[in-house]
Image (tube, rainbow, N blue to C red; front, side, top):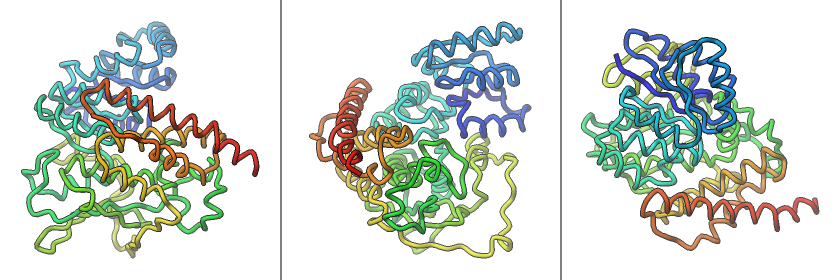
Length: 399
């Protein structure tokens, strides 16, 4: 029986992970659960699964959780603060760590799990985007096993040779193709997209996701970040990674080999499939997912993405080719712009404008260690906030 820590337990990936784990009590025991600030939901999860440890990055929320569990007679020990997530990631009772804390906040605990030699189930793409070289170095130094959880990267993982190693170009692979649903605005005009509301941007036609990643899917920045992540995880040059729009979301990615073979992984659009694959690896275990009926699906459509209507793809490709800290600045600018949009301080059509302005201010720099990464992230965010509060705010006021 393997011990599992779920970081980001209250998010969509975390909830799906707990669903899969609950189907296999003979294989797994849940030893730790963590989240940022959702004390109520984490309390319910702790009462159901009785982990040894729980943590909330928000100290005030952790105090609420501690009182709630004590009143219910639950013996789970509650830790608090951002450093608590790293403690859970390193805990020797957890052989498997699901890294599903979204955004830059998930980076330190993801690196801690890698350095501790865990089986790291990577759902926090920002760790690879912000600090890919540091993550790969931690995986190698700690002897960790890294299995990607994003449906696209997990599909690639499943289609690679069995001896493929994280961060190293796999033998015989010519390129990989990431599939994109196209998001809610696939058929919208540029003018309509520019005026989209947060509610419209979060109404994904295929996947149930958090609000930030739903907006990234609507701008296609999510796919741009996934291209950067794929280059890091699979040791590929950015030019070896392509994107194809596939509205049905049944083909999750494809790997093209030098001999002309094109391998694809197909399945219903449900995150429990890659989660179960990663938990059970190298075996296969049940996920609770509805099996894909190709006859009922009837057709699979593919088309090229439109860079004019979705400029975030271009911005991500430019950052990937620049390398170094450029992807970090891209990610920070995107997080700040999306947050402003969700707060209704920024129009949807201005999200790419913020990101491009931030990238134009990027002066380079070295990625020496975690502290240098966090310092660069703070600098990029300050730049983005200044742009949002300055010229773009004036533009919006004039509309």
